[in-house]
Length: 220
Image (cartoon, rainbow, N blue to C red; front, side, top):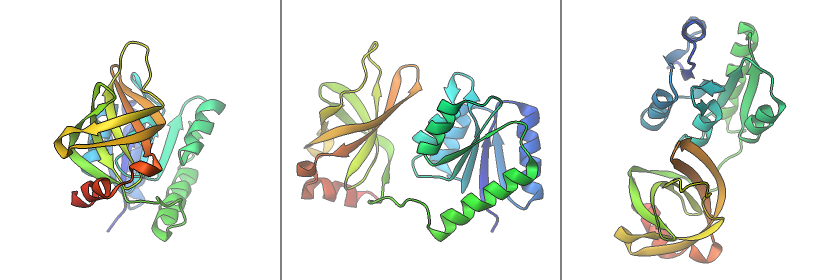
């Protein structure tokens, strides 16, 4: 079965050209032009590899890497060299290449990243992360939030942006439906829409209780 590659590129000529290149090399390519379309596919039908332009309207292609429900090998393509963005991409495990893209170089990089993923030489997660379909209503301190995935050691959640305030570094998260409250520490945050933060957090050691583990185990 051919590997599936998702291309998110707002320039139609580049998008079509990349799709034709990959299909000609034997990959199954899906090409879309907006951040929202890419995010939807990542959440509903994850590919084996993501290729995204760094600029997608008001969004940044790296936000697709960050917000993916599961870790996916990624390549960020840009028209301008930017050492800061390149360093940020590498910290998140994504390669960063500048247009014009050499087709042979791109195909070699794709195969290398897919091979690494297949053989398991990437950095493994300590715990399996489980997606919460539809989200789980929660409260971060007194603010409403929505948990999008959880593991034994952490979680990711969405929370409305409040003025210029960022999510707290340490907080109590309450899940009313499970009558459960845990203490967690913010690991990273990304603004995924003008008024929404997507956040990753780690549980405090004393919060990894049997009740929390039972909640994780109950998710299929």
